[in-house]
Length: 442
Image 1 (tube, helix red, strand yellow):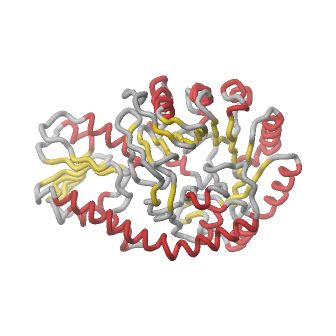
Image 2 (cartoon, rainbow, N blue to C red; image 1 turned 180 degrees about the vertical axis):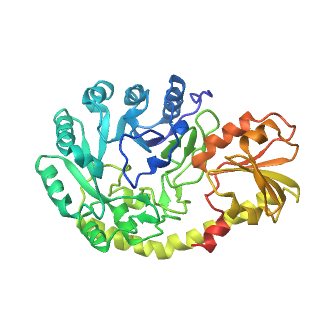
Image 3 (cartoon, rainbow, N blue to C red; image 1 turned 45 degrees about the vertical axis):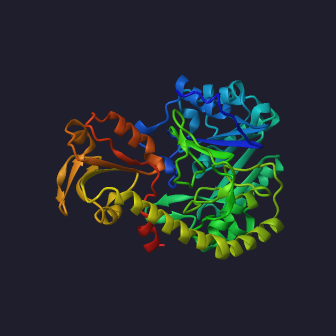
């Protein structure tokens, strides 16, 4: 593991989200955790925890916030309590959890004084044991832990959400409503919620991001000044990124890492995961970011909703178009160096077929590697499995294409290849579909 002691990045605030991959004991129909294969769950070892701490220690900031989130329930990961205890020695810790564990575990690992927030969600499945859930929340609050209950609303919950929220506030629990986000078959939430549900949420949501999400189907903050990549970061596997929406790779936990030297204009194509740029984050809160102790009010939200509508036309939309063109130009410049040679392509986390149109302009694609057994040639392109390629690597140039979500897998594959004398060309931070495709289907 590379030491980071020699370099200290000075910031007023250091805000890190550890996005773990965890199993879950719930089966919420909209949850992204349902798609995480078991072999991708995060392994919290002494070495991986040390890498997290080394990244945190490389920043000199009077306030450090470490947010532990996951694609499932983090308390089910072996080593989670060791991780939380270690993080508590560096600053404040936020944990997103469904509280389906004995509270003694968290009280032993994470002191209340080091807890920024315990963010728990009232999912549809939680209602099956609502009494126990609320008793746990109240016990934590009485023990000094800040707790916020994130009440998920879908078309089935309109009849009783109001009573639940009223009761929780009456017994002293901080709670807020948000729309469910995710997919169920062909339906995308919150966009495909019923109109009554959308109206209900717009009248009651205390957070800016879901208010904007309900109003703008293709929400983005592109071009707006943001501290992501400067003072706020997300770690997925070993990849360090600016935020949950960014496809930019800043570095690796066990390798080189280059944060931005100042806050930069947002360079993400979408803002589906909850975040806010600097202009709004200083006075608003959102699901897993910001300060949940900030007061919220309808008046401020109305002003910010109107302000974003202005910025969307004046800044966001033009910035999106410039970003697409810039990414397309960069992509074409990278491919131009191939010089019409024959190549093999290994895609990770993206569909190769939308990229083929661009690839064919610059090279002859011989083989596409796919995570399954070999298939017959399609449109003149042979398909092979990763395993078969690894065992019988040919001398052609290999092009490895990956999103940041799958960069760890892509890097592991490259490291597992036998030496052929020709190093693979790697792009670890591509969008799921190429910029030209994005522009065509925007």
